[in-house]
Amino acid sequence: MKYGIIAGNGRFPVLALETARKQGDEAVAFAIREEAGPEVEGAAARCHWISLGELSKLIDLCKKEGVTRIMMAGQVKHAKIFSSIRPDWRLAKVLLTLGSKNTDSLIGAVQKVLSDEGIELVDSTLLLKPLLAPVGAVTRRKPDSDEQRDLDYGRKIAHVLASLDLGQSVAISDKACVALEAMEGTDAMLRRAATLVQGKRLALVKASSRRRHLLFDVPVIGPGTVDVMVETGTTSLAVDAGRTLLLDRDELIAKANAAGLAIIGMEALA
Image (cartoon, rainbow, N blue to C red; front, side, top):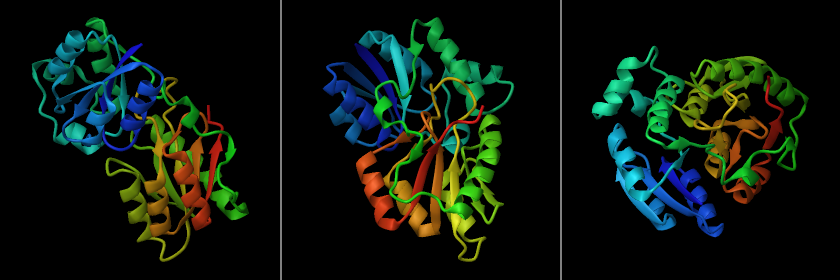
């Protein structure tokens, strides 16, 4: 099987490329110049560098490579999507049709353009299903009663936030919503929350959008998430089971256990 992988930042695209190679699949990387790291080149069968906004170039490269199935892997910061982007003529045409400037609208419109060119946008987690969070605790320690109360409360807020395509994460302390994620990302949101609670512990909830598919914007946690949790006094984390990727899973769990954190997967809310 041949896949195209649009590579953003982080470990997600590298793991997807490495998995494809181990399975005997051919994976061609289309690395986003503003986001992807150089390690993408070593993991891909071939690597093409494109800038944000170069939709025509992406389509031309897919046709040249014979790629008809493509997936998005890795983060592209929302702030860059809507502030740093320099659209080519094809993407500029797409942007003019958008009713609202959010990720759902933009990617949905790009998906339509790709489909019209015979290129199918497929599930971002297709190659990494074993890394999706299970139901239940993934760490030795489970949340205590106070943490679980905060996580349950935070999930209701996080799912509303995600359903509006505004962000994926919320920080809760003592059943109060301290901070909501917007374009700054989860790490920056947690650091902001830590300045507001004066040393009280935080609970973090990451929610997936209520959209049925996993084509893009899949929640991801990894060892770096644990580092920021420790830095900010965040002692517990809840994610949507089956819809959140645990990258570098063994390292993630080992670091969380060493820090005494509680991380759980919970059934996604309807």
